[in-house]
Amino acid sequence: MKDYNAKEFLTTVPIFSGLPDDVLEKLAAITREMEFKEGEVVFEENSPGEAMYIVIDGDAVAEKVIEGERHKVLGTFGKGDLFGEMALFDRQPRSARIKALSPLTILELSQKEFQKFLISDTEDAARILGRVINVLTRRLRQTDQELVTLYETGKIAGSAQELNKMLNAIMERIMMSLTDADCGLTMLYNQYTEEFEPKASRGLPGDEVFGLTMDMTHPIVKAMLEGLEKDPDLIEAKLLDGISWKDPEFLKMPSVMVVPLSNQGRLFGFIFLGNKERSFAFKSNEINLVKAVAAQVASAVENALFRQEEVSRERLGQVYW
Image 1 (cartoon, one colour):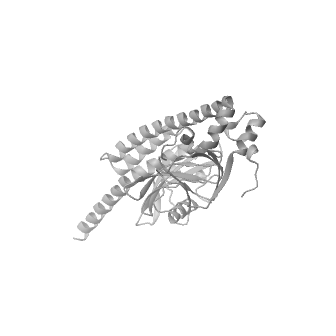
Image 2: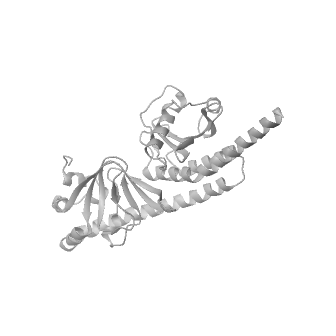
Image 3: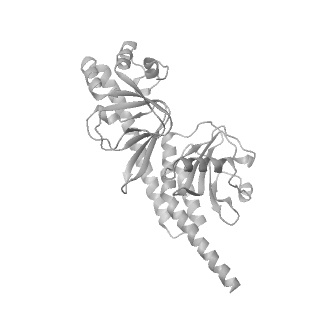
């Protein structure tokens, strides 16, 4: 187990902040520290909801089964985040699976122990439950925003627009939803040049974007490929804050998020978003939203690329005919 003080850690978690020391001592005494290796499952979908968890260190992902054995990523959790909090209210089956994205340390607060605390310290327990409800309400608002954005990007992806127009419309919609992104870029792979080329951009110098290319050795592309090697089916956002590269200079900024456009481990593009002013600007809900959009539009982009390749082959055949 990691060397840490449970009481001190609880003071850093918003739902417990401001509670008296003696109350924090009681809470610390009824929690249990747990560790998981990367890839290990904390709990399965439909398993009994018996505890709430708080991330001490590492990252976890919530996944839901779709189409048999495939899983859809619902969200990710980092240090200080809660998951499984509905267990404090009822013992209904879990609505999703939680899995460790990296070595993970969490604090478990069981429903059984919390119920005892609720009886012995009603006022403070009610205060904690009120804050948990605030967390749930915020997540519902974020889900509403995600659903609206996904509906609109889905309509764009399903339209019969030319590929570049479609990508520009999707980028515009993403930028409207992400208040922390002040620039964006979509790059697609060109199989003939074996490089990634810009297809849509916002908030970046047009003349420099026009001549931009990236090959497979570029740090941004390598970051995408490394993620796909670990899990070909997982759309994983890469936060490249503080990571530098020689070229292009105009893409160097304090906060950078890149999300792959891929299918079955094949990388055919990516979405780049940046904040030119602040480090660590992107919130977890914004990251999850872009991942959801990327997963949604990936097949539409791949189909459009395939159609373009077919047209090119037909034209090439006509020339030589």
